[in-house]
Length: 539
Image: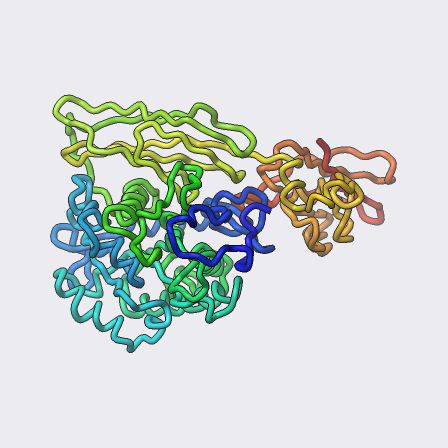
């Protein structure tokens, strides 16, 4: 399946001929898994945040205020510190290599909120284990040197960009072992960060960039560099699922971590263009084939970071300065898409329809596509390989720092044939007793067509509890998952009194979990009267 390449399959080399590893960026897997593990950036293979998680992050972002040195709100003179945390690649991309790192781009951007201070808290040579001890010099260096040099305090740190890795990941074992080890260490680091920075509210995670080496003994070769992304994915999933002691919500107990989200997804497979056209050239790395080059890799990461912070809904409330009331030089935009609904892979041409009034020349246009990818083209073309509902978001900026924002929704659906191709081998696809509509290869009594429509795995048996049922005060309730992208299949819940005559049960309500919704139906049941229910999938 796409992207499922084992370490032993990769050539052992470290030079510019290693242009393609046959690995697929995490947001682009479609219905495929990676080494039997779901890909995508968020739970259930999704690339977009679950609605309730995004709403929580948005609420935190909208309430973020500049703070004085003691942590008290001060809208006139306070600061919102945006801090990086990580190892050598992180500090180089954020602030220290070349002249086009993120700090240079952000601080020279006319739209930056003047109350935001961008500070580098990443340290070269300090991989994840060096940050898992709260008393380590890594933390004391940032707190005792970096923050004071920027004229800010620990109380003013409210937002974090975390990009971390393990040096020599092969020492932790092949996938998923090294990614699981990093996942555990990221959780520790985030809990320590919350202790050190008591007003830390938001943390955005990114994975490593592409390495031009697959020599196992190198610092961070492929596929380990690619697989780092799963550690980020899993620690975010843990918070969403309420496990591993990463609570950010005071209504749910002690707050021990910031709210977590993906920032930009910055890995691309060499010369093989990502679905937003990003490539990672050999010249984008240093001669060690691991660290970003000052004129190649660093600006590519910096631009993706800037696109994210200028456009993501949980960043714009605090990262962008407000337009002047009554200004006559505010730009406008009304983004459109050449197609807004269709089966993956769906290629969409976007048009900004931006307008800049006299005296307000355009500075830049930043797009993000809600799957970790982005563009700085005014009218970009983007392919969506993975089903889901995406909001392509645009921010345009004038040279005097005023902005306009807009978005356009793109609903990317799937097909049963795509799902079959992702879930079954060529031999299994040739055998309808395994991969056919009505086949039941895992023996759980859910035929394949129903597994697809419910967002289940056909080779993993699902319990009867996949259907939620209850009977209370004469009302029978039944709930079940529905994959929203399965637009080519109709799910019909039917009821019968005699197993002969069936009729649809109307009045279903939905709970939105992102790619999957939970449908709930209720029906009155008379005492001592049999009532039967069935769920039918049809094309």
